[in-house]
Length: 137
Image 1: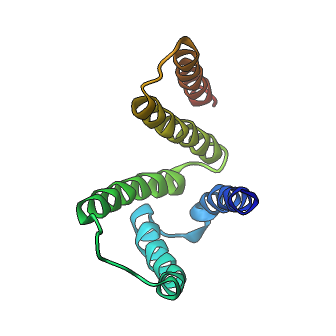
Image 2: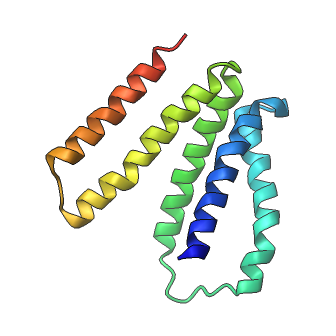
């Protein structure tokens, strides 16, 4: 569990930091997505190859759908971060994180079929947080 906690913290730091530097690249949102994807592929490929790639039993339709979802999300996110003013970029980033956090919560509720007043209150609080953050000028 300690290794998983360390990986969660490391992922949080990396996913939390790189978006704050995107606007300084001088590229458009779609260019950042393309070239960032290429660099990510080149960085990740050796790890995937060292661990071995087994294609038997793979559900390609899930890989294709999630790849498209990730691509759409990256295009929207990178374009947002590139176009946002330096003062408002972090706020849009926070709004995205609040919405992103709600997705596994919805998944958890659907899978476990557990819906309560607490979960409704949590979703309302998240929506209110997004509204309040978006009012910042």
